[in-house]
Image (cartoon, rainbow, N blue to C red; front, side, top):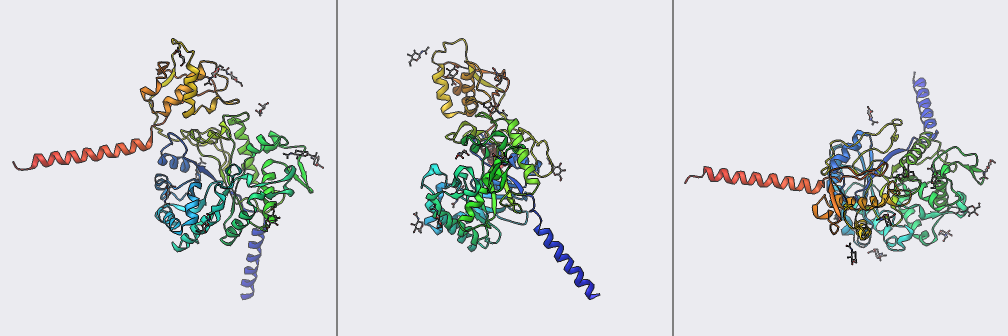
Length: 489
Ligand SMILES: *[C@@H]1O[C@H](CO)[C@@H](O)[C@H](O)[C@H]1NC(C)=O
Ligand SMILES: *[C@@H]1O[C@H](CO)[C@@H](O)[C@H](O)[C@H]1NC(C)=O
Ligand SMILES: *[C@@H]1O[C@H](CO)[C@@H](O)[C@H](O)[C@H]1NC(C)=O
Ligand SMILES: *[C@@H]1O[C@H](CO)[C@@H](O)[C@H](O)[C@H]1NC(C)=O
Ligand SMILES: *[C@@H]1O[C@H](CO)[C@@H](O)[C@H](O)[C@H]1NC(C)=O
Ligand SMILES: *[C@@H]1O[C@H](CO)[C@@H](O)[C@H](O)[C@H]1NC(C)=O
Ligand SMILES: *[C@@H]1O[C@H](CO)[C@@H](O)[C@H](O)[C@H]1NC(C)=O
Ligand SMILES: *[C@@H]1O[C@H](CO)[C@@H](O)[C@H](O)[C@H]1NC(C)=O
Ligand SMILES: *[C@@H]1O[C@H](CO)[C@@H](O)[C@H](O)[C@H]1NC(C)=O
Ligand SMILES: *[C@@H]1O[C@H](CO)[C@@H](O)[C@H](O)[C@H]1NC(C)=O
């Protein structure tokens, strides 16, 4: 009897160890939720959107109280972010780190389903980006250490991990060969300090990978290779055949980590996606092919040539929603990374682990009135272009760039597009459709073919704040009046 039990025990242990040595578990798929928008979808609506699409992980870029409150009690796993601008003070002051943890973590944290299920603190966002120079990287490790210390003091170090999302220009390789991968020489030493820190606290290395940007920057990479399409000509590197751009970048990182002395470092992908407007080959149909290729690749659990048994543990799609105020320094496509449009409408189906499904749109979205601002054709339009350019300097005209959905609308349609974008961004205020008398407000949708003239969203913040203040004053007034009426004269 006892013998049999021991045998069963041994078999169980064997079964478990075989299970663990099999190709890794499928990566958990989450989304990045950014809020660099003039009229962001209200956080409770976004949370509804996440829930109705079974999205269980979300990565934030800051610690906005409205966003964290909306995520409270949802069981969604959350990464809260610390903006790069705070790194300097968090490096130099343990007190600042303590305050940050107190105000932005302890206050919301819960792993019991009542508060916010925070699992990571992302210290900085792509602080090693080459274009930043040494603006942020001298502070990153110090800031991470101070946050970790504050986390330990708050007794949360075993529940929340500190990570640093890194851009893919943090590492590089000669001739695109993964076996030649290495971290950028100017940040080599900082990177070793960071890896030592991450390793000590068993935090993953977070890398943002962008096959779209790689395709734009590297003439040797084809679109098919970027989109996970079958290729008769894989890229060969030291007896390994690379079938797609994702594996190429991922293994370049694997080599870089090995050379830095951390061959076993766990990797998670912090951002990956494909934009749908504002550049050539940035369309919904190509984005759909990319996302389908990516999710199928992850589904096979086969990993990459250098890590066949250790695929990334988690990936975060970039991004949930389009954001009309993102910097376009790198290109106009920057405002079109969403799998949903700015108002929460799905652009294409995505597989979040339950199979390829049409995504559920945001419901009961509060739009401004069905009004647009266009150019008045009865006026002398000789100066209209100048007004349009001015409008575009603050509004979002990124869809009009080459390859964009509004690139080929004819003059003066492009002027109208600019005017309308400005008008919506200014909450359809009458004076924002003036343009020296050239603007005209219309209730006829001027959209043409692929070029959509959008109607803006109600600003949630202004609305809900005004709403609650109004109710507050009405209550106060009612109370005062009833007091007056009842007071004995
Ligand atoms: C979400 O999950 C539930 C339960 O597993 C399922 O019924 C539903 O179809 C899923 N929704 C989507 C959009 O995948
Ligand atoms: C980071 O903070 C430490 C401790 O206050 C300080 O000694 C160091 O100079 C700071 N690093 C930079 C680059 O300012
Ligand atoms: C908490 O996070 C918010 C948003 O990122 C930031 O503005 C604030 O300064 C943080 N609080 C502290 C004490 O650092
Ligand atoms: C492109 O391929 C050529 C030939 O294989 C190679 O010499 C070159 O370094 C590659 N360029 C890049 C940017 O990888
Ligand atoms: C980076 O640092 C490692 C370890 O100190 C060193 O072996 C390597 O040569 C360095 N690489 C560069 C390019 O500086
Ligand atoms: C890589 O090797 C395979 C098989 O040896 C070959 O068919 C393919 O053309 C090679 N790829 C390139 C880009 O040379
Ligand atoms: C990608 O863009 C190029 C250049 O505009 C174009 O020739 C090609 O047809 C596009 N590919 C797809 C799949 O749309
Ligand atoms: C166009 O602008 C110029 C220079 O500001 C001005 O002199 C001219 O009157 C304007 N024309 C119209 C039709 O508004
Ligand atoms: C714009 O170009 C697309 C193809 O790139 C075409 O299908 C569409 O009809 C054009 N629209 C206009 C208004 O010319
Ligand atoms: C609109 O199109 C005209 C003619 O193609 C061009 O000269 C003008 O610069 C465009 N204006 C804007 C704001 O795109």
